[in-house]
Length: 352
Image 1 (spheres, rainbow, N blue to C red):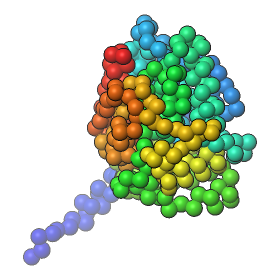
Image 2: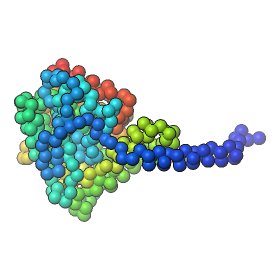
Image 3: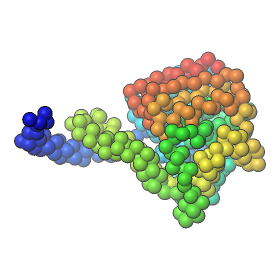
């Protein structure tokens, strides 16, 4: 007799119950309407082309430290760092009395097709830093770079060390060719010249589909199956929809910048080799002598720890510290454990 038994009637009942929950879930989603993202009040203080520089309104007495400028990646939207009140890196810094600014790169269009990395680093980022310095009265500021924005921040600090008092990088790749880097495997096999020559700007939807394909079951089917378990909890459902909105809010990428980043970083690993040149100057990470905090995520599938950890051997500072966050590339901002990240950053800054 087989050890396996199948109760067809029970299976039909469970399937019917699951279907009813999904129908109820569709009604619940329709009832929520448009979800709000970006919970902290802010004011635009500078704008140029598609870029807007925001300054967040304070939530606590001034801690008396230089302001923090958040430099996010060009891919996806920066409100990930301020997604909702109980899961916000920005709010965690504001509540500790820090003065926080954020660069929103906007949505590139055809007019931005020929922007290069130099335009972002020595152009837009430098002018934002100068605006923050001018408004705050500080000669140097705290720069916090996220993912690709962290790579830009490393380049910037190496080229303009006098303007950065402390540098924090989060889930930032430095070695783009580590064996377990799934994104690197895709990028190294990409004919980026043909892609950019044909498309011009690279569609955000295409890049987003690529990111999802790196872990297709976990990032697609699995999360929607799990949705049935929270469908009758309005708060959890709204949190889920906020994440979905962010995931699929993908700006196009300026063609030449995308070409350079893929070729220089992923295919040639120039940052590790000290071979990046911007504005006719060599980017030598050894010129970074300010304190550096490297925050990486131990379960990151886009920027594995092995891609971030080598930074220590490249910078010239004697004041270097790491924080290994027990989570993934997105969990570092929105998981329950994410509340410890602004605390770590604030305490590190306050000691310097």
